[in-house]
Amino acid sequence: MAEICRANRYGWAMADVQPFPALHYNLATVGSLAPVTAPPYDVIDPAQRADLLQRSPFNVVEIDLPEAAGEDSDPYMHAGETIEEWTLSGVLTQDRAPTVWGLTQDYTAPDGSRHTRNGILARVRVTDYGPGRIRPHERTQPGPKQDRLDLTRATRYNLSPIFSLTGRDAWSHVAGSTESEPWAEVTDDEQTTHRLWPIDDPAVHAAVAGELAEAELLIADGHHRYETALAYMAEIPGEGAHCFTLMALTGLDDPGLTVFPTHRLLSGMADSPDLRDHLDRGVREAFEVTETDRDGIDPGTEQGIGCFGFADGGTGRCYRLRLKDPERLDRLMSGRSEAYRTLDAAILEKVVLDEVLGMTERDVEAKRGIGYAKTIDDALAKLDDGSAQAAFILRATPIEQVRAVAAAGETMPPKSTYFFPKLLSGMAFNPLS
Image (cartoon, rainbow, N blue to C red; front, side):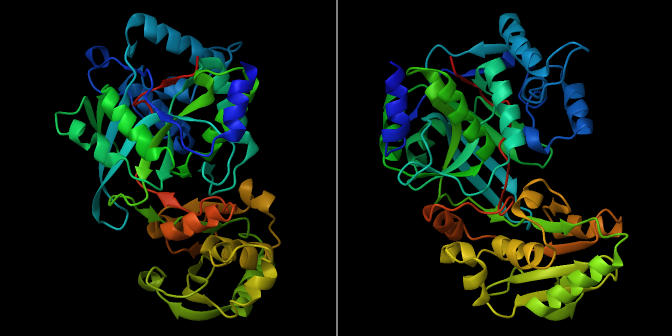
């Protein structure tokens, strides 16, 4: 048996998508999903965690972002014990029949436009990254992977889904099952309305599995959790539930799929005028610089390679930047694909962070001197309050470029994309034993 899962891990060249016997909240006990669901664990700070637990002591953060119950308590053990306690007391309930779940998300995007994104919750066989299987698109860090692995060992559940994009869209096979009233509906703090339909029809399961059998999956959000699933599977011999992980699957052609930029903030220069001057000179040497105001800093409509907005917190001035010599990227990123060399996040990392400021990939991944903002207003506010000294405003990465970088076997710098909206934690849990 030990070789069965291993053979699947290295030998499958297709997506194995299956229904799963979900553990989920008992709505008769908790009332609705509104007080018990939460944003992804990695965007929750201590104040927000406390607020979520004020809404309900059964909020998913108690197990997905656990804290030690006492001085001698282990937070991960506490999470595992809490799941068992909630299941025995009827807060959580286990489905007898396996299901896939239809998911819709009605949302207002950061640019003000309205969309509906469709997805399917299912368990997917874990395989190594590779062509025809599953591809990452961003670099990961070791710290979050260890945290998620410790949590998985203690709970033996996937507590939140990985968001993946599929080259084939299976939504048509579940759409008919979402025409009735949803099992649950919740509107989150960002005013996204999430609706869920568990589907136990074997014909639907077979249709979804067949549609996605030859689809390559691209991880949009949840790289650390996927690599945790790989590590967890390697620890347990044989075939079984541990060979799968929970995913929300959305077609690359879904009309509600949108991607937005994540802007860069530079800090640590407040007491270093020489470093500020060095940054200013480096930017002017590498880019054509046009002064603008805050209303004109967004480079979103610019065409070409290496276009950014730049705000100097020291002077309060704003600029539009355009790379002077795109051909130098061939030298600076020799061996990289064209899709990677023309990626704005990669250009900024190499030309400014590395060449001008001397920051390494390790510095970027550890967030030493760099931070992120989801909106231009947020970025400029960080300059105003002094927590950052410079901001680079990026364009959104086209989904075609995300796909091309992944197809070349490369991974982007962290936070190269911002897929909105996020998936809620607490919708359904996937058992691993």
